Image (tube, rainbow, N blue to C red; front, side):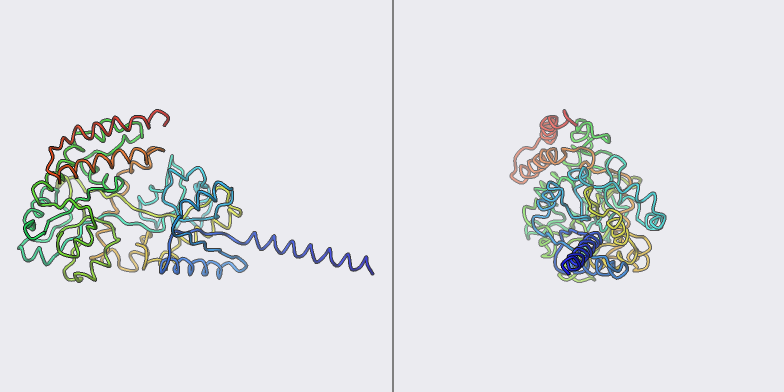
Length: 417
């Protein structure tokens, strides 16, 4: 009797253990930095993946504030989420699984790869290794107030406008006596975004091979572009903005704003669809296309993922037309087929973002070219801030000297590249 009971107990424990093992094997953890409406969309995508894969459970982990710290802690403890939202590839690439082999061997992924807008995937690629698939992006454009243009009798700008034409328009619509400026230059711009203004001039912060900033950050072209914006502040055609430029635009204090897609909805609500215009960034000349930086997010796999095959299947589904369409209300579609189906390429409020996206393949942002870019960016940021703040304060500004100093301060980060 006792032997029979003991045998039954062993069988039950074995079944339970097998069941638990199977359960854990079919669970993947998905970390996101989002909340509210965007998080709900991501949960819906996870549920849809579960429906298509009976027995699979996607555990959505919304880290929100402190995302980077929680992610780093997971990597450090060898217990990271299996898949996660990612943008900072230079920092985390050593902890991420390269997706090259999965993409090459999975024939069903070929159609998705061909459907991706060219260029976006470059932002999650380091040393030819792809560490994430794009899930959302924004290029940068120019917003302008049509009502003020109409009042001044100025034709709306077109995608072939130049920086000189841009400046002339800014002068015409400016009236500092009533607190209105054609443009606004942030006194503390994000160096990542600001680099796009150099690309159209044929320069950048750093050499293409990441070896130096000397001859790039302090090149004649960089000096001239920085001086261009400083002169606009000095002449009153641009506001040296230390507060929200988007609020100033909606309040009519700034007529032209450069930004990504983030303020679009608020701008439409504030001034109305009929008064909001969007156009591509200005060019250096009519024959040189403008260039936009891309702010993108991707979905990546941890190198220590517990179930890499299942993690890849989730990443692939997250990149599929079905999932991209589900995210269309919160992210610009990264697939050509979805953008076409939803009419984004023809919509006057979305088409400019896709037109500027076409330039994404032409340039590689500095943060992907050097492992200590964050330190270099601090020197760049300090230099740009000094140029613009000193200009606002009426001080004599030597742009060349300031940029040369930033180059010298940055050299210490190239010794161990």
